Each structure stands twice: as C-alpha cells, then as structure tokens.
Image (cartoon, rainbow, N blue to C red):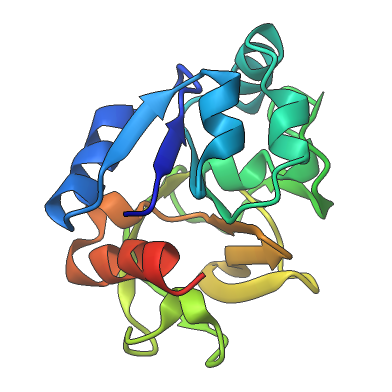
Length: 197
C-alpha cells in the first residue's frame, strides 16, 4: 500500500483532496509532521489563496526545505503548482524555486478573472500523469495567476492566451486545475499519480 501524505499547508480545502483519494481506494493522510513527509511514498502539495500567505505558512511550519529536498513524486495542485516556481507576482514573493520559471497575473485579454470553470487541456502524449485520459479533456480551473508555457510545461490550456496546465521537473509535478473537482478525468489523473510515477 503506497503511503500518501497531503502536506498540510493550512490554506487549502484539504479534505476534498483527501476524499478524492479515498474514493479511489488510496489511504491519504493530511499532515505537517516532518518525519511523515520524509518517509512518504508520494506527496501532495495543495494550495488555495495567495502565494504570499502560503509561503508564510510553509516557512512557519519549517516545510520549505523538506519540500525542496523531496526525492519522492510530489504533485502540486493549483496554487501548489505555482509555489514550485521561482517567484509569484501575487504579492511579489519568492516561491520554492524548484521549477525555474515564474507565476504572473493573467494579462488582460478581455476575459473575466478569475479563470473559472471547465476548460480544455492539451497534454504531451508520453506523460504518465495523463495516461488513459483522452486528449483535449476538460478539467476544472479557478485562478487569476498563471505560468506561461516553458520547457517544463507538459500540458497547456487557453484562456485568451495559452498557459501551463501542468508542469514537470524530475519528481516534481504540478497541475493548475483541480483534479479533485474534475470528474472522471481528474480521478484518472490522481490514480496515475499513485500508480504510474
């Protein structure tokens, strides 16, 4: 049985993420215990709210270094993905610096912000994270900041401009959408994270 720890960032709807794994038959524990995080087989970094508030909580809980040094597969969700970058314009804050790119406010394309609701995702065919998911599937998004496409982008979405729907660098993965709110394809992605990586 794989041991999954959902890192308790204190700024996310952690229980809905846990329930999504429970429904798939995976035992997930929400924790900020450094030893449990170190010994987990898989880690989840969820996030809701502002980058500035999230980084302060990670700092206060001594979680920054342990996340940076993680060697097991780790999946950042929504703000959790943005925290993997070097810097966020949301509060002009240095973030975890794991993926060398930055998070910026959506440019004004005449579309309402936040970008909210279901949108089509195009992904790299060889990504184990998207195995068994039809190309151009719809996932559920809620965000006003985005990471533009770069060399670590493994999936894109378009909302006035193309942006990164998923990133990967080594064992660090991030998705801008909420898989726990994305129905069958979201469940498949979470299953892939547990079984394929």
